Image (cartoon, rainbow, N blue to C red):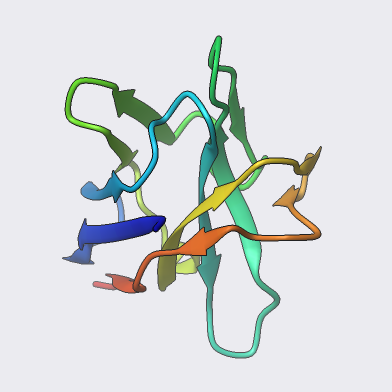
Amino acid sequence: QLQLAVSGGGSAQPGGSLRASCAVSGFTLDHYAIGWVRQAPGKEREGVSLVSGTDPAYFYADSVKGRFAISRDRAKNTVSLQMNSLKPEDTATYYCVAVRSWTESPGGWWADEYDSWGQGIQVTVSS
């Protein structure tokens, strides 16, 4: 059974940093891509970052490129999202998601089918 356990997030001031982690169980990182999706009130869901499975490739939406960094630890079976230079518009609920196929565009990534979702964590950026 695919399970994703998410931790981290919280509150930060503009320009600050936060980190979110996703611990996966029931599968290995080689078999699924793991992505981060955020949802802000009144806004569409946005796939902000993703790391693919075997021979990993990394994707970032233009909105977070240069500020966010996704990484994975195969030994610990975890994927993390380091969020730097945070902006108020980064405020959202963030989800860790496992997928096997997806589409990328400068505006974000998305999938027709999401294999597993972790629980959402809140990221709030305000002064």
